[in-house]
Image 1: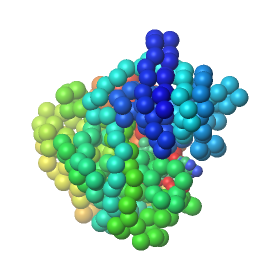
Image 2 (image 1 turned 180 degrees about the vertical axis):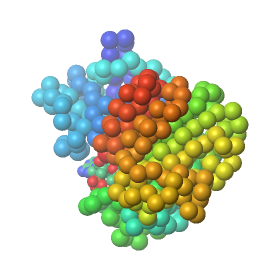
Image 3 (image 1 turned 90 degrees about the vertical axis):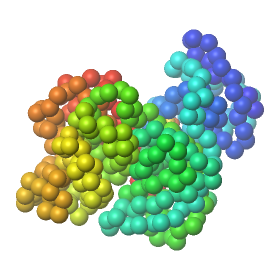
Image 4 (image 1 turned 90 degrees about the horizontal axis):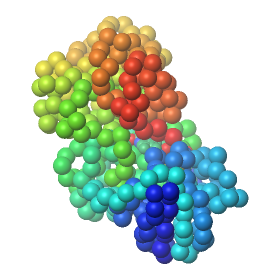
Length: 344
Ligand SMILES: Cc1cc2nc3c(=O)[nH]c(=O)nc-3n(C[C@H](O)[C@H](O)[C@H](O)COP(=O)(O)OP(=O)(O)OC[C@H]3O[C@@H](n4cnc5c(N)ncnc54)[C@H](O)[C@@H]3O)c2cc1C
Ligand code: FES
């Protein structure tokens, strides 16, 4: 099928297969269609069908709440073309084949429980992948409707294995499957890499990371890239990692190693929302600081003592991300310098 996307600056056409969404078809052909979550929750990929037939698979997707289906509005990440289609999109369109995402298969191995509700695992890829730190992939498993986005934890210039981490949510289908079924050696389909909340050492800026729970995933990838590039030789960074209690925190050994090798230029603070802090430093990893409070408040206080000329990375549950964005903007960080992923 041929999809033509139009906006006020012109139009572009691309092919779309039977088994891929219109969003994924456009992205894999290098067209910068608008999107954020790629999984139906944010509403960024909205478009209006001018002609042709489209099947929408997840009709109740939360990202579609403000759409007008009677006028032909769709979420491109949930839409499958049934014929050639023309769509109107609100944003400017350009083509770039640099690191375009692709569909491939992966095998889950090395499942490792990090806390009572956090699982780390490796995804062995059928083809090597290049990605930017901070990016994510969308996984699909047989028997579970729809895709789930997970941010890469590891980083290298090219990888044949992704490290991913999942925080189980109550009644979450992917989380339940991963924790309860024997997911080891299971095959999944994946699409990626995706996401624009990325770290680029060439930008030459100090940075701050604010993560809630498994939002730390992409920050680990950023820190790995920065550490390998010896970025902390002449840049500073602060990481604020929010969890309920210290027992809910993970990756502490790795975070401590990054801080230790940073020549004092990387500050890591674990913010505990539901537990009093007995000492300002972690007993086992004394180069990790502890603070009590919601992570956006702890970060807000920490930022008040620092330079605001930073790139800020934020990831975690939507409520936490929104609070962190308000806190950063109130602290003087311009919105153009804030990159975020809402884990909805
Ligand atoms: C950019 C991004 C990065 C993320 N990174 C991480 C991460 O690194 N670690 C982590 O723990 N979480 C991450 N998440 C959240 C993750 O994608 C899941 O939402 C979460 O794990 C809960 O999945 P679940 O299946 O357990 O819960 P469910 O409630 O069963 O499903 C949650 C999500 O699945 C999709 N979905 C549900 N039902 C359908 C359906 N019928 N059809 C189509 N789609 C459906 C939707 O996207 C929904 O929000 C990320 C989210 C985003 C947007
Ligand atoms: S990108 Fe489609 S709803 Fe988020």
